[in-house]
Length: 151
Image 1 (cartoon, rainbow, N blue to C red):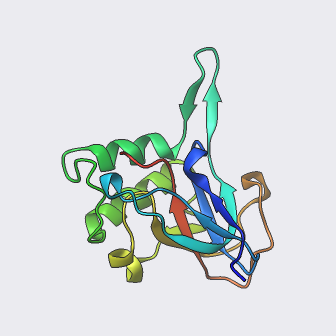
Image 2: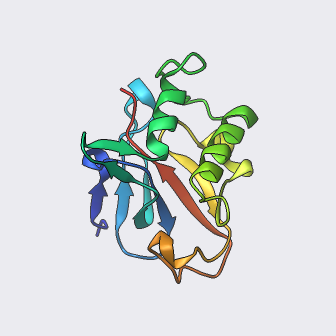
Image 3: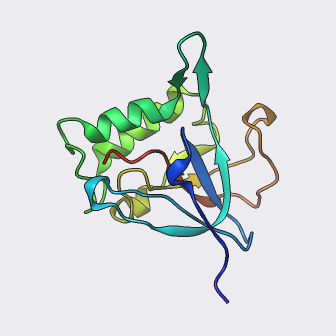
């Protein structure tokens, strides 16, 4: 019997799908105009998202990542042939700016398996409680960073 699937296509903001035996598959529309729908079993955790009032303006990693993958290097095409060191460096920089790099990093060994809005990463240790989740050890543990696709 197939596991239940949660499609994050209507989710707003940035998050990580932590690989975990939850019995639930998570998916998102990814890869720019390629509109891929990869899946991973785990738990979805929204990370570092906020809304500024007045104006209802989303603030968080998604804004920078969306602009990067829609920008001159990838042109919204989705980076479906994999990411490179430059992409990983940019994403790790975004994680650092939002105070996520203490427990989360791009998985350098899985760059070719990653693309826009579906980036393999490593949960390197227990996050601080202020990030809203805990208890996913032992570490390191695989995770996928995901956000709204540029198509």
